[in-house]
Image 1: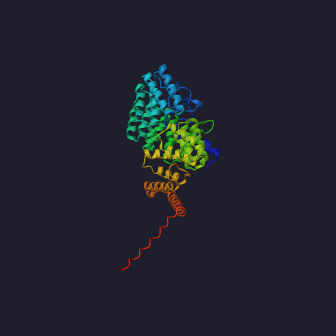
Image 2: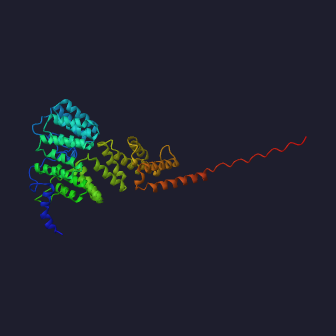
Image 3: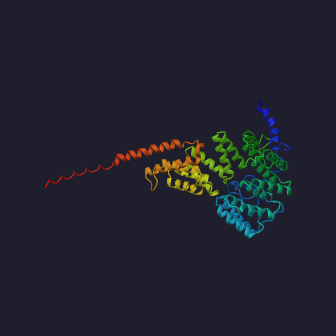
Length: 440
C-alpha cells in the first residue's frame, strides 16, 4: 500500500489522467463565481445585480463577446426579476423577465433567464426562450447548452445529441458545448463518449468546472463512486498548494458529493454537504428536499417544514416536495394540512403508490381528523394501505403488511368496545297466544 506521501506525489498524475488535462494545475484565468442556471451552467453575468448574501441565484449567465447591451428600461425589469427570483417568487420573476424582453427586443439574457424560470415551472416555452437568446447572439453557447440539455431532460436524447453535434460543427472551440454534449452522451449510457468529450472541453478550458462535473456525474451514474469522489475532490478541495481546488464554491459538486455520502450511509457528511450546496444555491430543490427528509428521519419535523416550504417556492409542482411536506405536517400534528398535501398529490397522479402509503399512515396515527371518528380513520387507513399494495404488487418490501395488521387490530378493538358500550337491544318477549275459544 502506498504511503500518504507517495499518494500525494502521484495525485497530480492521476488527476491529469482522470480529467484529461494537458498540464496539472489550474492554469488560465478562473471565471468569476456567480449565479448558475443548473447542471452545465456557467458563472454569472457581471451586469446582473449582486446576489443577496453572495449566494448563486441560478438565473443568469456570462456575457458573450460582442453581445448587445440592454437598454435602461429593460435592465430595470431585469434587475427586478433577479431579486424576485432570489426570493423564490418564480411567477413574479417570470413576469419581470417578460417585461424586459418587451422593453428591449435584443435583451438576449432576459430571454435566457426567462427560459430558466419557464423550465423550473415545467413550461414548454423554455425551449423557445433559449433558442431566441442564441438567435439574437449566435455565439451564445450557454443558451445553446441550456436548450440541448432541456431536450435531454424531456427524454429526447437523440434530438439533443443531434443538436449538440450541429452546434459544435459551428463552434468547435466551445468548451460549454463540448461539456453539454458530454452530458448527453452520459445520459445515453455512452460513458466512453462522455468522458472523451468532457476531456476535450477541459483541453479547451482547463478550469471549466462543468466539464469536470460531467466526468464526476458519469462516474456516479456508472457506480464508480471512488472515481466520482476523486473528481469532486479536484473540484472542491484540490491536492495541495501545487494543485488547488478548481471551483471550491461549485454548489452542484457539493450536491453530488452529498448524494454519494448518502449511498455510503455517511449521514452527517451528507447533511453537511447538502447544507453547503444550499448556502451557495438556495434554488437547488433536490438538495433541500433530501436535507429535509434527513431531518424527518431524525425526528426534526419542525426543522424540515421551513426547508420544504422554501423548496416549494422554487418548484411548486414537485410531487416529492408535497409528499414530504405532508409528512412533516403529519409529524407535527397538522393533520388537516397533511391531508391537503396528500390529496393534492393524488389528484396530480393517482397511480403513485407512495401517496396511498402516506395517507394510510396519516389516518392510522392521526389523533383527530375533522369530520371523521376513530373507526372511520382506521377504515380509511386500511383502504389506502390495500391500494398501495395493489399498485406496488409483489415487489413491495415495505412494512405495509405490518401496518395493515396493526390497523385491523385497532379496528377489532374499536368494534369490541362498541359491543360493550352499545350492546344490541334485547328483543321484547313474544306476546302469549290467545286462548282457544270455548266450544259452542
